[in-house]
Amino acid sequence: MSFGVPAVGAGEVPDEGLLLDVREPVEWAAGHVERAVHVPLGQVVERLPEITELAGAGPVHVICKAGGRSAQVTAFLRQQGVEAFNVDGGMHAWQSAGRPMVSDEGDAPTVR
Image 1 (cartoon, rainbow, N blue to C red):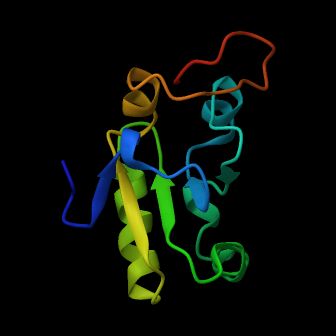
Image 2 (image 1 turned 90 degrees about the horizontal axis):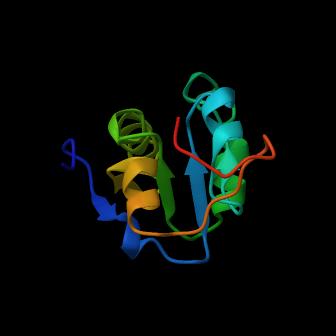
């Protein structure tokens, strides 16, 4: 489900480049991609300069729990001229694809 924005599957996200996680802090702490940058949805607009600086000239892959919030952010970033792609299925798809995750809680990482 692409939500009307360019999307890639979890298995297609490259191992380099900016992976932007827009979930809430409790979701992030339970399990996230180690190299991801955490910017909760409500902070994206104010942190746009930071996001664009981190992205450089490369694309941004945006992820959330299932794909809805990340689709909103992907649409916003594209309106700002940033090459952005929604990670279809979000962290659920990431975990199902067996891609690596870490947890800040000391437990096995999970999608919350």
